[in-house]
Length: 232
Image 1 (spheres, rainbow, N blue to C red):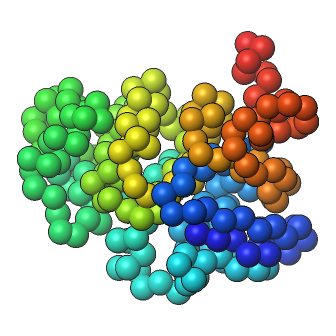
Image 2 (image 1 turned 120 degrees about the vertical axis):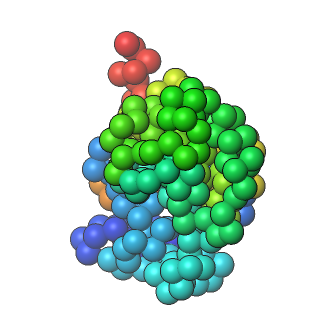
């Protein structure tokens, strides 16, 4: 995955960045810095104002929809959960559909055992957008679905309190087990430090990139970004 002389807005500064196959990268920065926009560009949901985004040399917006769905998974506050069975919620968009045994195993691995029991199994009903699920259940369901998808590129937006403590545990399990290239938007310093690299965003551009110890330690705005949480 590469961003080549890319700019998020017409007035924004260009930047270059590359995620190597299998690399896990944390996107950090203040609200409005451009982190979610960067995920949308990688997902092919939008085009850069200037420059190019490429996945294996191809613009994600040029990939056939079916191919894009097989290649990448997106987990975030707006990820769809359609009304229907829990089976449907866990396997939405997956072809071929995993077996019930696989769905149950992964669901329980991701902390959904009580949810499965409460709903009465995979045939249990889930409301549109998961309105009858807690925020923690919803996030764990989406992480389980991403695992079942086995994508080559995994995009996760955890910037809006997506993860409760059980969700953080599920996220760590996903990151441990996946071979995918991962871009993770996070405000959790501990999670960011566990990644292979950190991209620090500010004002719609990337201002620092490198190993977590290089980007997050020392002096500068990128270091102070996490200081309020540490002081608390």
